[in-house]
Image (cartoon, rainbow, N blue to C red):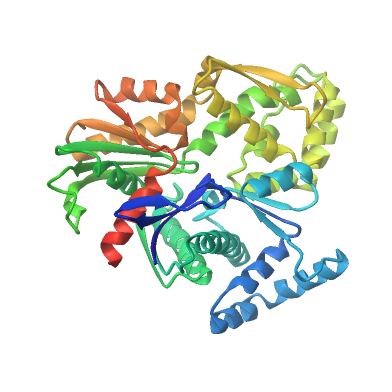
Length: 454
């Protein structure tokens, strides 16, 4: 069976064709979107999960040979933790969040692993680990879909950003696509193709328009913002080769996660001493705080978890004019609540799309701890990443040498009126239309999969 697979930074979705239209497959109860999260009782159990769920015997044996040492450690974990052979050790989606919120310092939590793909300076063991994380997630999603459909998924088109990372883009993209291809094969897909995510979103939109237009497709995903200038409409929709219709595309590693990080840093970290002072009168060093909330950067997270950071925080407590705030920060680090804090920032961003203010509750840190955030404050805090997004849109229009007839917006963060207003101010008096902010990419991937595999 043919499907479109949106392996997203924030959410994952699978689309199929049903009665001549696209249908998204429920992945978690009735939810068709599964948060891109994984929680394991131990890191090595992720590799064990992959080994157990590779269907082809020879491929499984090859994988076991490659990961023999890790699989041996996984067996040791099972013995030491007295885990039964059939006991659940990995959790996905909302269940992963639930386990992490309950046991933040006990297991291994991964959010938005797609944002790490293509990273520079990764050693071989890091690449292997990301392969296993992505494979486990794809195996889980594919299995859930097949159980729901009662059919095997064999062919898929997977969405990809224009650029996974900003540094050495060509090498970064090759590394990321290699990981996704390896993961997809180990998950059981026989044929895998890729399609730019903004183009996929545009294909979904194209099915609904009745006259030819030049469309600026803007896909603000969790990890990247991708833009494409595309000729669309009745004269183009049936073409199998659309290369001449794609006038320009731009993309960069800046997305919804970066907005969340800015909100967490600017509005939540002051509760932990970020804007306080030292006894010398100097301001508190801020890099520690940004390392805590930059959850899409492996090196920042590793630095925040290091012994050096622990010792630095203990010294800052002695030097601070408000040591109780640093105590709160130390507690956040020890209990690994930094992901939870960024999740609070994401929730605030979502609420402020419809409301003018939102009170963030942080009772899991300290009883009664909260702060009020306004939409205007949100607007000010996100200016650096928002400016990068606007520049990508302007660049796509400039490359195309033509003004768009319409701007088609997709991606969760595209709902924000702050972002929509900024886009209209930058691009000019062009109608801005909304797609399915979460389902457009999956639907477009499904359309393309049906076109190339049938």
